[in-house]
Length: 299
Length: 269
Image (cartoon, rainbow over all chains, first blue to last red; front, side, top):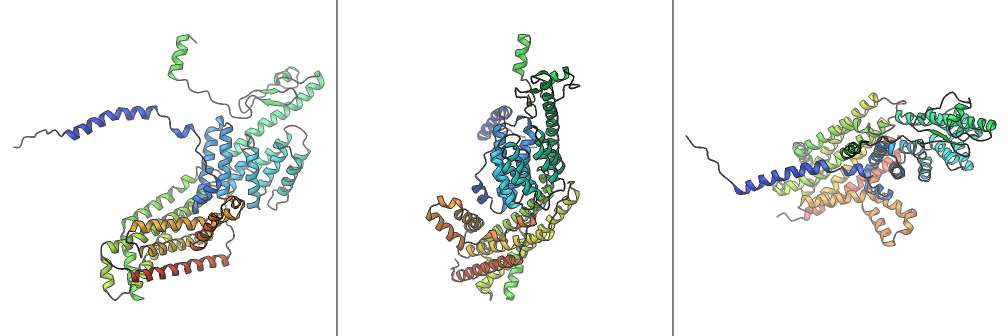
């Protein structure tokens, strides 16, 4: 019977020990490295570069940018800052220039972005949309509203709104809606009329939910503003908070902001909210160190 | 003619036996199956994204086959010296080129047919099962036309790869040269648009002249790209389709004649 013998092979031993040494290092690095993607927004190429380098896969790249925007918007609704909004506007511009017949980038650019700022970035995107999507009444409608409401330019607003109403595919309620936009004098009334129309025509459930939430907030703010005027007639000054209205008997109870903030009156009587009509940031989970510190200071 | 047909048949069988062919086809089918899930990440009209993914898969698969099979099969003949066996028979060198091209085109045509059919089936499945408020319109016939033009593009790429393989013995070099022609052919139209547009004012005359030369010398592959038109149901004038078809046919004939002329004069070591 052959006796089993153990032989030592120095290079293999060195390799095995190196692997054993590296394993905890790899584990440590894995645990303590934050994925870079979640820290920064990926850089966007110039439109011309993307159009040439995507070759025949331009529509696919356009879809990709829209997916990125949808994911960022869905995941970061609470933390959307100026940088993220500008990035989304640029990504939508890219998506629309890579596939100019794709409707969704125009809808997203017209519906969502202006409410977070970046109005001037959205206007050229929508103008391009009008050029390519001639049968679509929504794009001139969005552009008209942006001029009308955000840019305070009723002349240009009227031009695009009438373009929308004259579109053969426009729904029957659109002329009435536009007429209401012109007639509304209140601070938020025009926006409410617009959002009501938008809510009716939007199909995407995620967008519909966003519009619905904003609409209900604006309806409350509009009502508060009107009651504020009533309060001023009685007491000579504007109320400071909705509680003043409750105390004056003009309101049954303090309304709740759907975004989680608190409504207040500005000096000129306009109503605003501490949430700025954005989702409230969730408080960060406290780290072990912070908890320990709190315990030691007796907080 | 008969010799070319026999050679085409052998090339087709040889191509079907290649592992790369099987791998590329499996990859295409998996990608098409996943297209619904990928499209679901987007917002709004997800069927548009499914169609984009489907047509891009057809295009990518067929072009991959054209690039690799076009350069690989001829180089294999030269490398394994099986070309001597073929050329020792009463077969002209030009017949060899035409036969090889016929076989490869049949292989690419068969793949286009299979992947396109699967693309149509998956698109139909997602079209029927995805719940959207207003079901989007899918131009089925135009999707088929777009797939047909993808095949035309791949046929042109095959002709380019055979042209380069006729004077280089390295498959890798032929592959890179074909890839370069594809990239230039895909971009010339867009570059010309930029050069003639507002960006052209800042472009140097040398670059403008180079862009013009490239535009006329290299095949304009954007003429064969009907994917956007098919997905958005844009008009496809029959006159334009016929012109694009004839353009490709003439380009292919030119390349194959040039390839057989070069191959006739090539010294076999």
